[in-house]
Image (cartoon, rainbow, N blue to C red):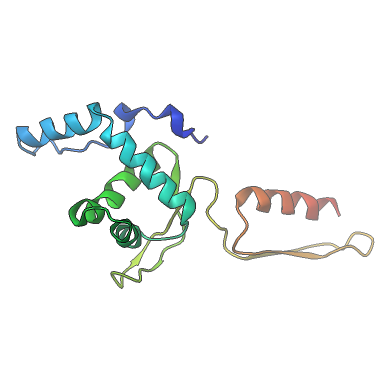
Length: 155
């Protein structure tokens, strides 16, 4: 089940400060959440993922910086708020790939339920000369895969 963005419960999200962090870090974390800045940044990150699906956290950082966000905030915001959005069920990890910025193999990010599926071929009995296989392209999501399987099995 995916949550709608208007129903964020920030108390269920990942903690911002670790137990071992100093008191000032906990105060800053509380203020960031209580003032609404954390939710605002989550919504900003959610829009970035919706408008630019399939990027890595580092690629989102570069994009935010290119849009004029402060360098420090752009460097850290995606990693932290993507984790919050994932816990909230609003985004999900896609297939890992080599990041164009870090060179490392890392996960990509998508709006929940919209991550592309790996290409799959289903083969089976031909029903009255019908189609015996279905290929699901990498751009189709899980709902389309389910519908394709249902359509295929009915043929």
